[in-house]
Image (cartoon, rainbow, N blue to C red; front, side):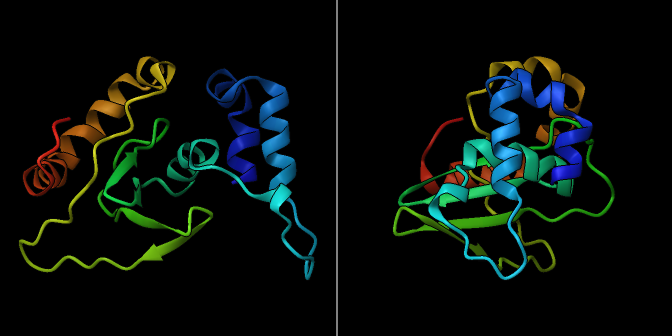
Length: 150
């Protein structure tokens, strides 16, 4: 993630609140081997969702209570092999990995793509549209079972 942030620092600065904010996020990612991860190192889904999605070249789905949000990569178009990463919020302070598996024609539900970040929408145009197109079945499935409209 650090490499991705350094390589695209100007881009992330335009989205995440400037170079000082990006430097602060990168500082919080560096933890000495064996050191305790302090609360001051924690990051929000808004801080890291897009960086994770771009670094791993796959959508990140954040689930919390009765809702969820999907963050799609803005720098990387969909490849032939990708699997969404689903993270669930526990106790309002921890994220755990959900291991959802698809088999056959089974479609994984995908929460609506995060609505904010108008600058991401503008700068990611073709990349975002490519992801929206390929994710359409999962987004529609979620809309059908949750009753939410995107």
